[in-house]
Length: 124
Image 1 (cartoon, rainbow, N blue to C red):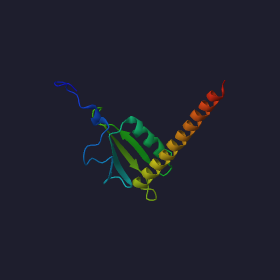
Image 2: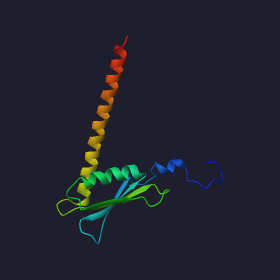
Image 3: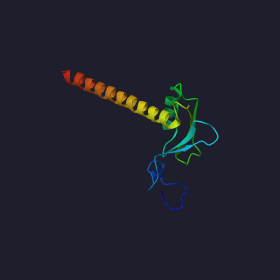
Image 4: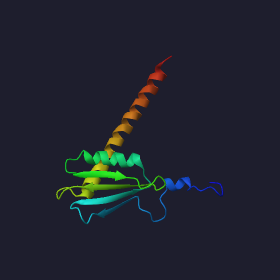
């Protein structure tokens, strides 16, 4: 940014600072089987994906997320599970399921691109 402009550097929105963790967790002291996760350098896209995946799990009693401020690039995710499914376990499972879904989408996309290229190459 030019000197004198009151704006943060754009890379601050996606690059982790030295020693900054991508994901942190803190147990809730008042609500049983609940905790707060902070996803650094993320926004609504990641927050809503994780929240939606967590709510598909019947063991999750509550899940919600918030972004503190438009210039504060982090997602605060609140999760309440159960004794059988604590927050760390349900979030880990949700992230694994999202990874598998992304892999499935990627394979399908690559297959469709290859089929389109093959079909275009077959046209005289």
